[in-house]
Length: 203
Image 1 (cartoon, rainbow, N blue to C red):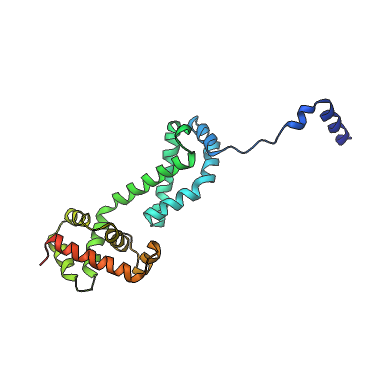
Image 2: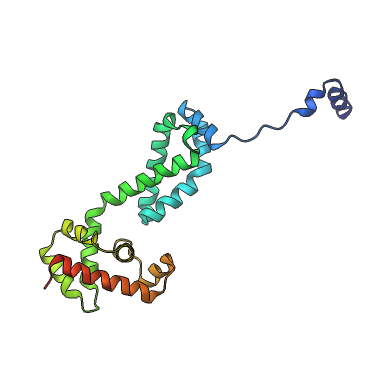
């Protein structure tokens, strides 16, 4: 009987046949609702985008625990700044990832003092006849001078050295990240060390 009634209804009211199921809200829809203080929309947005946000943050910050903390900070920012989102200027996912990247970079910069120590230690431990550079850098040079000297390197040299000492990657991992041979990685690091030695005035 119910089926017959539905058939009669659609015959009598043909517009019912044109009704489509409701489509799930887009990220842009959810952001607009979050801007209005909709906590349910915020939870749905979190479930939808958190894996991508964490993945981006993890690639920048690397430390799993800190990456989780930064990811939570990103969503606090989203909740507080949702009203600033402008769909005319880009997609919601892009806006969210920009916030995530900025937060991740801020965390890395906040940990810069520790990173500087790692950099000096990495130079010290580099053994291809350039450890005299490291000893002098560690005992006589300030972190700011090291960074200034790094700016004089070529982009390939700076990239390889940064990944090896700032990122903590092995030569093999650097090669895989840059998609170049390990020998090329070692050459770039070696040449970069020579230039650092000259720039820092190491005898």
